[in-house]
Every structure is written in structure tokens, then in C-alpha cells.
Length: 71
Image (cartoon, rainbow, N blue to C red; front, side, top):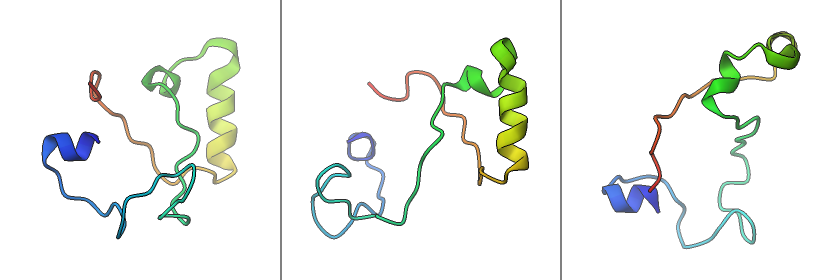
């Protein structure tokens, strides 16, 4: 919806579907989705958790999105 509102073209698949009922991108994985603050917070051992995730090679990339991105 956000792409359509902003007029951005993207590979959304050959037909309408959704990731809950009929996923057109089964090989796309988007997990460990967290708030921006979780990238730098050190409360409750979060720094050690991030370190373990990186050392276990579980992260391909990190993307920080701006606030108010979705209406």
C-alpha cells in the first residue's frame, strides 16, 4: 500500500496476494524486525544479544527507516 500511495514501482508479484494466505515471495525472509532504538540500546543485556546475533552470522543487513514512514 505504501508503494502505491507514493507511486513507487516494485516487484509485488504477478497478481494480488498477501504473505498470510498466498505468499508470492516465499524465498524473501524479513525477520528480526525491531524498533530503531534496539540497534543502540544497552538495557537488559541487549548489546550482548546483538553481539551474539552478529557472531552467529544471522544478520544480512540492517535498515533504519525514518519515523512516520507509514501513514
